[in-house]
Amino acid sequence: MGSKQEFNSFGCTGQNVSPQLSWQNAPIGTKSFAITVYDPDAPTGSGWWHWLVVNIPASVNQLASGQVPVGSLQTRTDYGGNVYGGACPPAGDKPHRYIHTVWALDVEQLPVDANASGALVGFMLNQHALGKARLTTFFSR
Image (tube, rainbow, N blue to C red; front, side, top):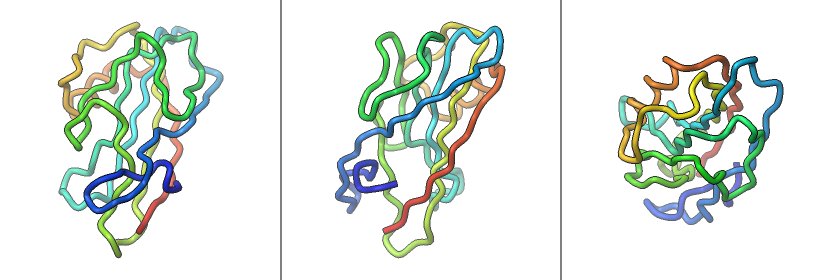
């Protein structure tokens, strides 16, 4: 990950722009997709949710950098907002892992709203997952 995907607060000086992602070969029966970005190395005891996007139409197979599809829903990250929150590990810490997951779901819409926590969204994703693909990136400062 580069400075484009780095947060711009908490001592970080990046551009805070979500990454470009694309996927293919969704499982039969996919009715929507979701994307999550999670840092299991955050010094919180529970990791850190950087991005949660649900209700992505099944016809979509890519996201441009800095964009989400019309009709999708961004839920609350651990930064407290409903937008992408970039990488910002503590200065001098080991490189953190940022797990980007694309979820293929059996429902068109998850039963969550914009205030849903990462834990609730994660629970719902696991209840409706037909499949998922992961990409792990690393960032340190």
